[in-house]
Length: 84
Image (cartoon, rainbow, N blue to C red; front, side, top):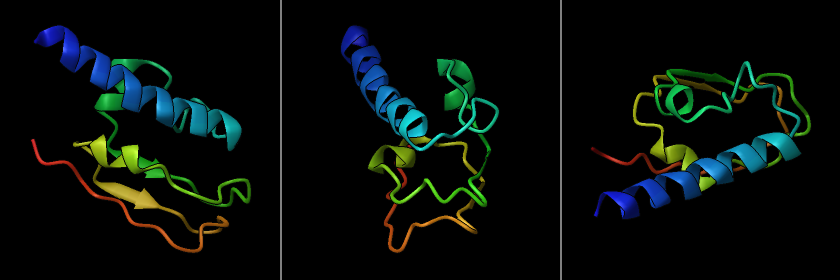
């Protein structure tokens, strides 16, 4: 069963990484290593007009405490946080 969980983790993390690459989000903001992404506490996407949407998989960041979209082109979003 652990392999299924790992595959699920890889899927949502890959979705975040693909979105970050397409939105020109630097690795300093969205880490491209699994452990660092999972433990991410602050996600400040300020002043990036390339960001027009937020992937639902952001809700898997269970340690996220601060999430800022100031100065982006996101008009409407809904993030569902996953409880662990």
